[in-house]
Image 1 (cartoon, rainbow, N blue to C red):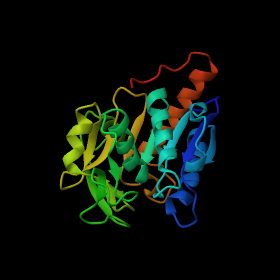
Image 2 (image 1 turned 180 degrees about the vertical axis):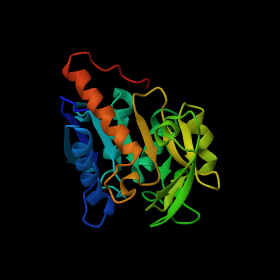
Image 3 (image 1 turned 60 degrees about the vertical axis):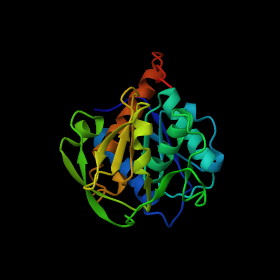
Image 4 (image 1 turned 135 degrees about the vertical axis):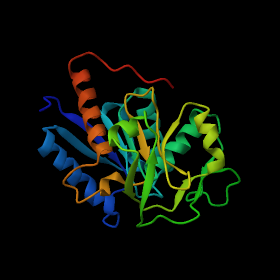
Length: 246
């Protein structure tokens, strides 16, 4: 199916030749253009140049932390969450989505990321007991969630390049305020989170952009791109977009 409306997608991250994801994401989006007729207008946005994010139809916060600007990454995530803009966060995007939600929804304004503030007293994002940098691992998906519907399976093997994750002791804080954890690793640590009331809000600690050889985009990326195209159509046809609950 060909979409007649151009979807403006922001890739938020500090583009680097040393981050594999930054090479792969444009290729994956090109495949989606070719395979599914999606008109995707892609912009790279540095974290220290985040501005007017409400003009985009989709926002993807990429791996590559520590970012030039933690505040910029958090601002992009908050705009997507509050404005109902389709959002995907992978690796560092997952970690910073947890941080944004804890501070701005849960009221835990002092929580920090150990990569950015290793000596802080109130850490939400902590070093993983075992680094997943360069590893593949199986995730268990909760049926009935967005992640479960998209994957169509109870298990999936995914690729990681990260060394930080959510402190398990803080998971209930986020859940009590509406965040749903929809996939876990074999030890029960959360690996995917989503907001059911949002048009599309999905974050993964793994990197779906590195799935396979890139010729068949991961279902999460495919769904994100279609959600952005759908929003572009709503905006262009004047039907508007109802902001998600804050």
